Length: 314
Length: 78
Image (cartoon, rainbow over all chains, first blue to last red; front, top):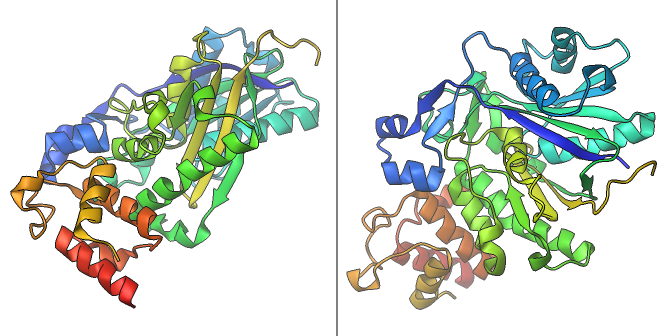
């Protein structure tokens, strides 16, 4: 059975001071720290491409795990801001930069903040169907490419980052069956027009606050679990306010909802794996719920379960 | 129909703190020191209670407890 074996993240060193940026828009320090949730927003270097962020995350994965580059059989990049105009696909560019073997499958997945959950399911299914044993899921979606620094609604939120997750056999974590929501009628509320990102904050907040708690309840009901049987809830770190609005709906386990975007901001599809990297090795964490929401509008929720013993040859 | 007391309870449930002794009903949320995220939280709670979805165009008018009271009074009375 294919599962999660290792996760790494790459956060660019350059950053924007978000408190100072907020002051330009008349926003208080309290608002930036406690409602947006991020005092700094990482920024890729000028000239650094999406594929470069992806390569940095993969190189960390290769250095920190037992994954051998020659054993990689598939590479998936979740992005909506790939290199150039998206043709060729960014995963093929990463393939070239890393000098991967010609028999490695590569493709991109066009999704925003729900992309990591989708990506886990897509790559797991792809590996199993293809008879492959090892693949890497990358999230790399630098919104700095599409943010207008004069647009208060977006420039205060997003940070650049990338992550790499190794999926393979004998894994630590099993990937469960997800639930999905697509509210395409609201899709226009988080979209690129004229080359810049535009967002209707109320619509996105409303979509997440109304749907995420419901989906969490649904998936737990489907798996016949109580909220208390989940050790950690990692929902997309859109803003501190939305994470807290979701967590408030689960008062008995509210402290299990991770709020941690202070030094990264909203890193789109990378926000969930950045946090998962911090917790997935802790033995006390046996079950984690992930929920990503955003562009589409789209929502995907899934449970991860720690294996008692690594499964061999199953 | 929502009462003022129910709106105040909804504000409390939304995690937003206001000083009830400061005669908050007529004051704008801005004057009460609330920000846009606070208002979003309050409106989400009210949507939950009433089952009425608040469209974009109405948000800018819902900037005090009094305005919210009048808004839902109109919605319910049709």
